[in-house]
Image: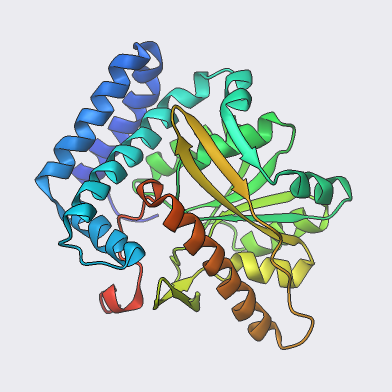
Length: 304
């Protein structure tokens, strides 16, 4: 990356460093209260992130962003979002047995069956619940996997987050700024019978596949569908949410790649099927969908 990090970037990186260094050593009840209080304060300020979350949730619920129910739902959403960060800071010191015992996973046998048979698996998931906790659970169950991470700013924060995830047993590849062979590496892992996990409802490249999502057009990253088409790996959607003090995780049925059509046509069909599964999961747990950015095409600012 080029350019000197801004003061805000440096403060964010310092805050994350302090979180990993300090939060695990403080009483859990105290830190949970602090993160919840911070979420409520940010929610009351009605900044751009909160307003965007409310607009996104209004699309999910099929109502106006001025609906009082959306305002209340956004408060739950901010609390969920801050709970994610609270757990991220505590996760490296959390016993593996606790992670395994508190994860309420369903549908996972199909994942294991494919991996046991030597067939690669692409796990596609939206930004919901605590995806890092799900990753820690999956590796604790004896299944290391490869993922791709957005290039955070500043570089020090990206490196710290990468080290955090690698410490949980994941292999982390950068979305941008790496050796340029990310797709090839993912394909190799899948052809070797490994697992790949990818966030899949927000396109960060402007090269995604257009799909209908809650009644309007958006773009989803092509990667999950393209990897399934290219390698023959099983594409299995996963939905995550918070279930009381524990975590919910549901693996849906494999999305089958069409037998006929061009590669682009197959990727389009598979991506739309994936979007439909995400719709169902997000509609069931809207408070745990952490989408504080613009998503739908009509909401995006023109690219320059």
